[in-house]
Image (cartoon, rainbow, N blue to C red; front, side, top):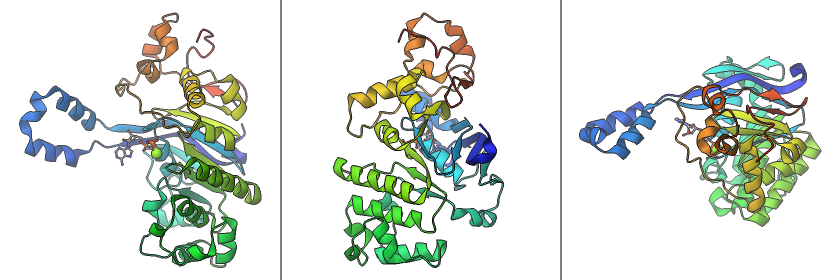
Length: 345
Ligand SMILES: Nc1ncnc2c1ncn2[C@@H]1O[C@H](COP(=O)(O)OP(=O)(O)OP(=O)(O)O)[C@@H](O)[C@H]1O
Ligand SMILES: [Mg+2]
């Protein structure tokens, strides 16, 4: 793929979070002997003392006007990746290029020029919208920051927000209307890319459908590219033309929606698909029960019930010792599994 034509691409992006040292020190002060005696506490302690690798070498690309879905279980690093892309948090390593400019090292003031073009829609609108401002004030503030000449009434009609909500406060509105406000706020100034983190989480199924259709309509009318983050694979399949599957900080499979839905070959993706078909209504995948694998070598999915590994029919040493690198299956389909062509699962 010619990356020069891509709106956004990353190279080997990483994010490590330091251990929560302040918290650890306080626990140690108050309960010195707990650390030594209780096995479960010891385990928690060991986990908290480890730096967390939330994003572990992600290379991805998003084209102009493209809708790309990012799916993965809770804790796999989706939100962290989104926050890295909009430079809300600094990367530990790697590069981000947006609109032809390497933005990884830009200062916050240099980033200002790009803030209008690449925007993030956060997971919980209720906590993002200032409860002390009316909807009108919230939207006018966004217009002033991002566009200066935007029209408030045009904006609310774009997201089908009733006019009588303008004088209400966020907490007076239902979850669906709050979502419409956040969408309106995000599209002010016509950005090139919106990173939408769990855009319909917490909404009733019928409201979810309305918001999904609104997002689709905005994409079609304004050609805004989306990176849609969700653990709801059905939603991702419906809206995206390409899907990235994330597991423990890595993109373990990516391809067109057709390739991922019909020809996926990573056992984790196969599990996601089975689960999505099992419960069609906005299911939440439970977090991995696997112990966090600190062993830098080997495939992390082998600890999480990988059916290929557990079948005993492959050379497990390879899974134990070598982290699989993404391999090309087609021009658009890529998978990180040593035995992706194993046909018996
Ligand atoms: N500020 C932070 N400090 C330390 N660890 C963090 C921080 N933010 C995220 N993490 C850790 O990074 C990992 C990835 O978290 P992240 O929120 O990106 O996952 P996610 O895929 O968005 O999960 P969810 O689907 O539940 O929203 C988790 O192990 C999380 O505990
Ligand atoms: Mg998240």
